[in-house]
Structure formats: C-alpha cells, structure tokens
Length: 92
Picture (cartoon, rainbow, N blue to C red):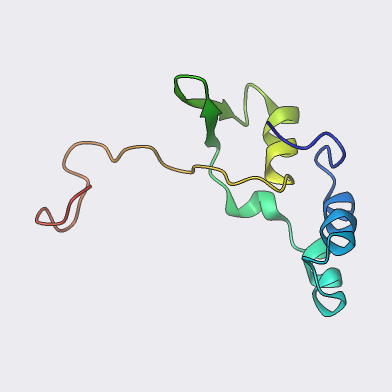
C-alpha cells in the first residue's frame, strides 16, 4: 500500500526521499516540478494478496494519485492483448 505520509503530494515525497538520503539536493527542484502522473497510464496495478489489483484513475482518482506519488513500484502493464507483439518470436 502507498505510504500514508506522502498522500499524492510531490513535495512531500521529495522531502521524504531527501531525508532518507535518496534524493540529492541538485535533483529536488526537478523532482517536484515534473508531474509523475503524466508518465503513468490510466490504470496501474498494485500487489494484492492473490496477485495484482487494478487501480483506475477514472474510478479511484485519489488513490491513483496517491500511488503516483508514492515511493512504491507500480505495475503499468500486466499482459499484452493477443497479437500485440510486433515480433511474435519474442516472449510476452
């Protein structure tokens, strides 16, 4: 689950990462100005007890934004649709 001390706030995430020594001062301004949400699809998946649980921006906007600004890895694609691989010899 997403960290409750960040709650969808880029500045709060930057403060937390900086205080943990994981965000260098030279990167802090850029980190807070770039909209992380712009780089995520409308649906992301998070770990659940029995696999992955989808979180949709349209139906759970607050949770989706909190996840976008969490210090948590998000899954952005679970499976390609059939025939989507441009090179069928590569595994999906």
